Image (cartoon, rainbow, N blue to C red; front, side):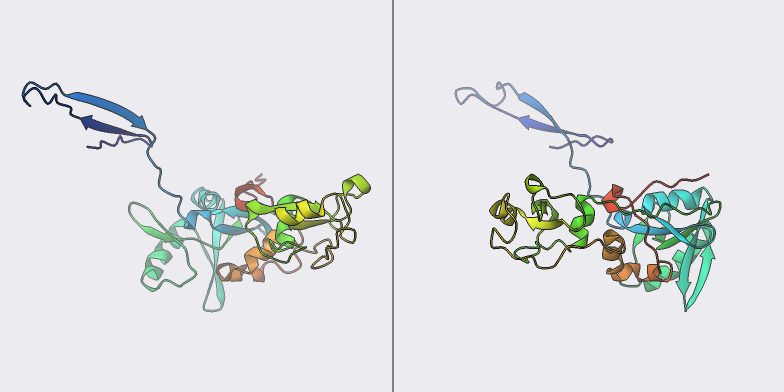
Length: 260
């Protein structure tokens, strides 16, 4: 039998009964072995892994946060929900958004995300607006592995095939051993096989051709990946001419807000 504890760890108790064939069942001793193992935790809700666009008090995009952070700001009355409905934008506090969610629960859209609590179900907002913050973040784009992979669409720039993140690497077109610098114009996404094949040579020397010439992106590559997802279509209204950097924490998106 299995007995589970109330915490995140479970205690599995396995009762093993052994009997000596030469004795009767009544006289056989019972041995109980107790084995403690960590219980398998439930996978995180996909809705909680979504991103929420944050506007400052002047309705200018400043950050992207995760859902937990967004609801924390709403519950503390530091932000309000901005929602597009019938072609018009409306603003909602946490309580009014909860009431709105109850009305919308019967007609959920395919790209909507919902979170169920003990007493109610609430829709994940796509955009929130800070009520006490009107500054702008620094417009800076970091050159790092995550941004390079996003810029190249997770496609090896030598063989042209798409790969998951864990089997991709960053390659210097002109090797560092040959004076190559770590710049947007000299680094590309490469699969491990092509990276090893190229080694410390230039593409010409290795007889390998680049899929496209590496350039510095005009916008944050991670942000562009989000915009390609239909569920974040409403972000486009607020992201015209936005070139600021979004941090790499929490699935690639900044989760810290410089609140006054």
